[in-house]
Length: 218
Image (cartoon, rainbow, N blue to C red; front, side):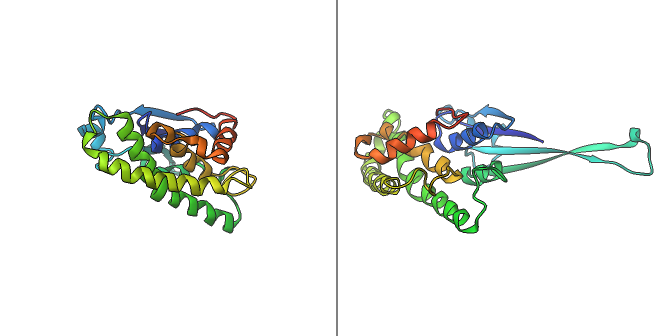
């Protein structure tokens, strides 16, 4: 099986998938898609993902078809390729049967609870303010959006900070896929103009994530 991950190096969603691959020591190929240079709008990428979004994971499986009535020289193989979209679906696939996925059904459901929260509150608010703040020349028209998202991002980070006042990771003592997802955007909220000194528990949690074996930075 061959894994090809298409992503943009500054994208938090792409980083989730890359970090998951690295933490699990998976063998994969990274293909850089520079969304600022409109690589994601080119025909060759749109053929892979018509939505023009990253990340994208391509899974290629080599299936061996052997007919028992023929010699080995008559055997043939075919490539089967599957394309996965959406960052949290991608990392769920990558982490299957690993230490990042809780075995018990309640922690497993809680993991998904946080994966959904991450997309609806963390990425949805921190992602835009980070982009607007770091690309002022192209986003001057989005200042009203910035102020609105900035306030919501602060609320989301405050809520998240409280979760770590009495626990090491989001589900308790053990790191999970939910931590990886939540970390991707929250740890770069300062790039969106947020003062992270207001979130001491989050900053300690960041350090715990960054101390994991095989951790790679954004």
